[in-house]
Length: 113
Image (cartoon, rainbow, N blue to C red):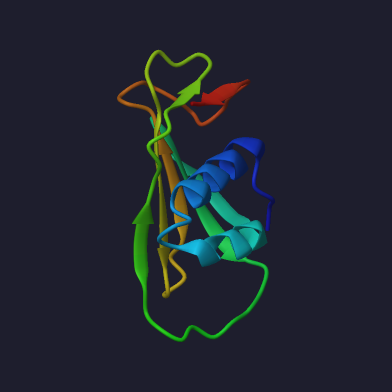
């Protein structure tokens, strides 16, 4: 399994920070994510997660989280959208997509504001 890159890690930290009032326990877990694979769609990337630790789920859950912060990636004209999907069935992923621009998921710099 691969490690998260700086863009993915920054997005996860932003989502966790912006949702800490509703889901305070998330900050204890996201650094244990690993990357199973990255699937490129032509307008973005879906990062499928593994998890370094094994644990028993007490309850079923399904969350779709994002942030109000804007993400801009150098070379793209428009803001980029992102969302984190977490569920108890281990189908956890981060989706990062441009808003209609061709994009292969690569970046040289980005801003989260």
